[in-house]
Image 1: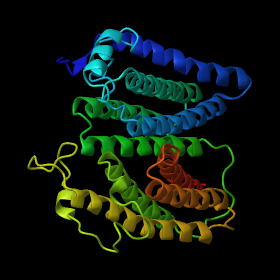
Image 2: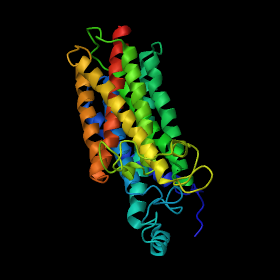
Image 3: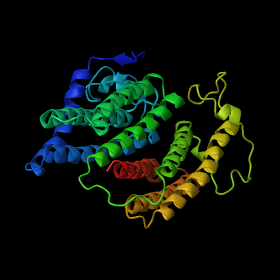
Image 4: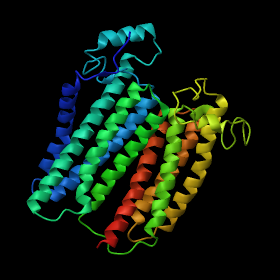
Amino acid sequence: MAVPLYNLAPVLPILILGLLLALAPVAWIGLRHQQAAPRARLRALTLVTLFLTLDLILFGAFTRLTDSGLGCPDWPGCYGEASPLAAHAPIHAAQTEMPSGPVTVSKAWVEMVHRYLATAVGALITVLMVMSWMSIRRAKRRIAWADWLPTFTFVWVCVQGAFGALTVTMKLFPAIVSLHLLGAYFLLALLTLQGAAMSTSGPRTAPSVAPRWIAAALALLVLQAASGAWVSTNYAVLACSEFPRCQGQWWPTMDFARGFEIWRPLGESADGTVLSFQAMTAIHVAHRLLAMVTALALTTLAWWLRKDDLLQRPARWLGALVLLQLATGLSNVVLGWPMAAAILHTGGAAGMVAALVWMLALCKAKVTE
């Protein structure tokens, strides 16, 4: 059955549901911080939104790993409805026609819950933007660079929504899915920077390393995250099922040219032929090699900063997350891509991004003291 890719009929009920979900943390912050200053409430809501964004990234990984990305083949609803309940008949028909296909009742629910959570996070970010501008207006002060962060975060979450729509309508196009995941990491970074910028306790000592080294580590991590997204979206994790060798060899047969053709459909080369196993192997091995370099760089940085008065706390988090990434990455290979390890691997990458951005924010605060 042909389904229109876009059907805006359920937009309003989905937005209302997202707003209702967002009201719970807003109300909790309001009750818990009744006597606090507006800036303190804004920071508390930012941290809650940061936590929920991390949860959304983890649930997005679950959506991808359960092959639920096309559980509803249209956007923003499901067969033009706001919930799988209302769309039960077409979902059941699709599942009956193809029981192991992309559309099943369970996959439709996973996909729609992910959209509901994304809408709720978008609503919270909108609230943060409004609260920020109200706070500036009441204070009648000059606008600082950090005051623009909630507005820029709002703009970016709209961009993320567009990538979410394209993920569905372009049928899990690998480049779009990868950009959607990287965009989620960037959203997390913006919220981390926003929360750190509103911290009431400023640093007292200068960092023991230049911020450019932290920025370089972050750039390397982003490259590694892009590589990991490419592995995941092309389902290349199981191209190598042993470590440290791959397919019984140190350097198996690989096709890097086909593996890193960026603009192509899922499972195909740019010329329309089926993506070869050699190309999948190249994607996997490239990620593995880059992971070694990234892990060494981040471990060195964490060790270097372990006793730094200003940065030791995020450095310890970074070191712990590097260990988590190594453990979950190895588990994905030798244990056949277990769900828990795969989700934690995505979450670990998000956590490392947040830790490095946290470091940079602390350095920025010290410079501008």
